[in-house]
Amino acid sequence: MKARLVPVFFPNERTERFSAQLESLKQQLGSAAEILPEQPLGTELPDCEAVVFPEILGEAYRSAAAIKALKKPLLIITSEFATVSMWDWEICNFLKDKGIATITPYNLTEAKTICRILATKRRLATSKFLIFQDNPGEGFQPEIFKSFYWWEDECTRTIKERFGTDIERRSLKELGKKAAAISDSEAQNVWDSWNYQVEAAFTNQCGINAAKLYLALKNELDSDDIIGIGTNCLNESHYCNTTPCLAWNQLLEERDLMWVCEGDTSSLATKYLLYNATGAPIFMTNIYPFLMGNAALKHERIPSFPEIVADPQNHILLAHCGYFGLLPRKFSTDFTVRRKALAIVDENAHVFDSRMQTGAVTVSKLNAQMNSLMSIRGDLLGYVQYKDSDVRNGGIMRVPDGQRFMDNVYSHHVIIMQGDQRQTLKLIGKIMDLQIEEF
Image (cartoon, rainbow, N blue to C red; front, side, top):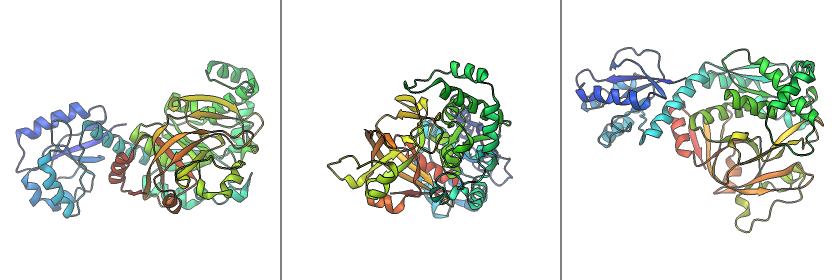
């Protein structure tokens, strides 16, 4: 899906340069955007995601009301390099003072990123997430799971209101029955066709169970408008004799289908938006700030945090289901499928032990009202292992200010992206009408 852009011109100041720049935009942005027929300012726009001004001259100073009435994101791409021209900063500043926001890319990559964000906005508004659950909070560890916002009707309504995305829920119990009904021979053929590195303790039965759930999930994808998927895989794990981790990885590699752990729809909305906007390696995990002390240590069954000499208060342990997090194979530097680590899932369940390249990362998450996006620059320093714990292989991340992080973080679930993505998050904020909260 491409972003649909409508070129707009000023009736009294259209020049030959407008036409030349429009042709240039069609060539440079054609892979990311559909350039619709140009329209004079003041006419009704066709269905589109944004307006683009290939040329913007002095008439803009006298047309602020008409520009504001467009009520679409306004792209100013006036140079032959698919950027804003330096001479247009004054007009953009004038419009800003009139309460009119403009989007002004500084290079071709950023212009294409803007188009991806616009297309993602369109896709969210015309699609749905599919979640398998029955009685959230009534299964294992209800004292934890009953506190999660994503089970609430308000969360579902807010995602719909903010992004237009429907959330369809089906029975996890019935999904488990459908998976169990698939023959071992059919599942064996699928498992044999996969090429995963597995640990020695990973049995053939583990692989068969994983393949059965994959086949059952694949059969549920009955429409093209499903863009994200998840199950209540921990709290209601008694409905399945495996975990969906390998199924998620396969569906990502085959269909670019985004998934989420534990049926967390707020994380799924965040993850889908960020992955499609940035294209960066991305995954969801849990955070255990060193400042949390014994509350974090007890939950993960570890004796202490790693010894950090300088500023230990600014460090965070990243761990989920016993390992770093459900980082997909194609985003990993190391990837091994292992048998389950957590006690609450089936003995034949599995999990990923994967690693991301160390270095700069960006931590993000949508807030409860889906109107603010957390944006934190961090550094993934390395990995730590605790035998016979719930952190068999976790990550260590440093943030600029651990105390401020603790005071402002939205959730124990966060989305981690490789690289410093803060500028892209600012673009997302402008296009999606989200406040960007940097701390």
